[in-house]
Image 1 (cartoon, rainbow, N blue to C red):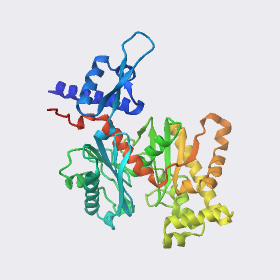
Image 2: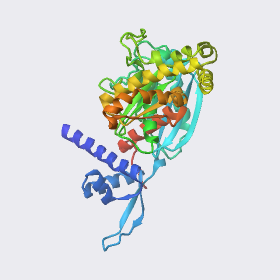
Image 3: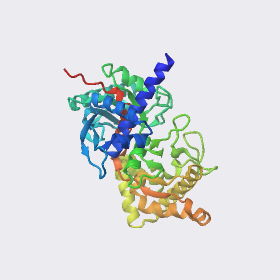
Image 4: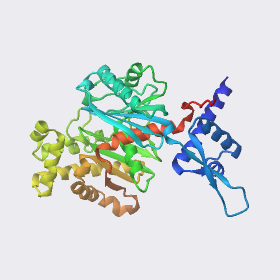
Length: 405
């Protein structure tokens, strides 16, 4: 029985290898797939026949070579045969999108959840309603193969994908969010997954980078500071699912106490509340919210306001210290700053680079590139779409075979 199970698992893995190669490289021949994946030509032929039967792949003409060999038949993935649903949960609204296997968004919407975030069951109700609404908007001939939900807070690396804590949502204890959502969607046959929203944004920024570096760290400031790590195109979550949380990395052993129980955490120096308060804009933040307050700081920085510059100088030095620590440990190519840190990057960047000067003199090739994020507020939604797409491509067997009469 175990041998049969292993055989099925290997076949599903090989199906994913073949489909991912076509998704990443476009139309290609069986010989090219065999060379790239390490599968035998006979195995590739079997996998392709299976994928054709599922409606995921089609023959796409003939490529003639310059020699006497037989012409090669090109294979093309059919992206719209399968659909994924992505949901991004923010403190105020749910953003939802339907995408095909190429990552092309075919429908999107946003709706407030009216404070449902304070009660896990109510938030699960809102997510389930959004998924049903999205499912009705999916192309009628597409098979729904994955639902992925991006949520603030660390997500445990267990089968339940438990939200360990989400203080911004009033969740001070762990919540089995995936189970809550699945219980409200009994009609769905596809997997449902919950991931950290900053991890999703990291994945999106990685794929948006023209050079595709091997390793990227994302540090973003919104209500606090979150982030993520992508290595070789995959989200790195660590041993317990909580890697890539830079906001609570200590930058001063005798710094101010933090709500996490430590002292001198990055969020206490470079978090939006800390920076805006130091710049004299704390009341604007409390009265008008983060967006208007962040804009006011950018205006003050542009006119060289001394208090604003001093606040950003502290934030930049703290960020530089954390980036030095991260890159010393992980030897990464790039650090991307998102959220309001991207907005303030023209002033933060020089301070951060100055923090690197001593290390640069000693090891000039080890300095990471620090850049502002490219995708803005769309990063998390685009990232959860890419996560769902990659998961679906890795398991094409979730799409049933078509029966021809």
